[in-house]
Length: 103
Image (cartoon, rainbow, N blue to C red; front, side, top):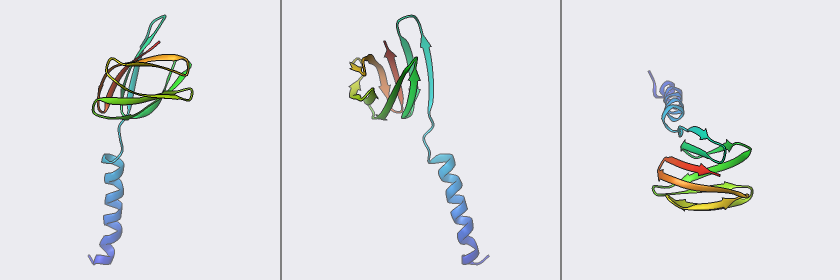
């Protein structure tokens, strides 16, 4: 195989590797009661909790930025902020994992 023929194969292999390994995996789960929701997330993402849209990220080793309704806060575990009229408390953060309570 000539170098010219190998170039498209190398480009295709790089594209596949980027898709498989270069993108962040995101997951989320929620458990709600009458007054609050506990939200567990992996990876930066937007998540809807009841009728509130939260943007979670960037996620750093010990802090996370959470935004909603035009407000944003960079929080560590145990800290809380009122964002767009909704109280959000960070239970834990260990990048890329975050646990929040939304009240």
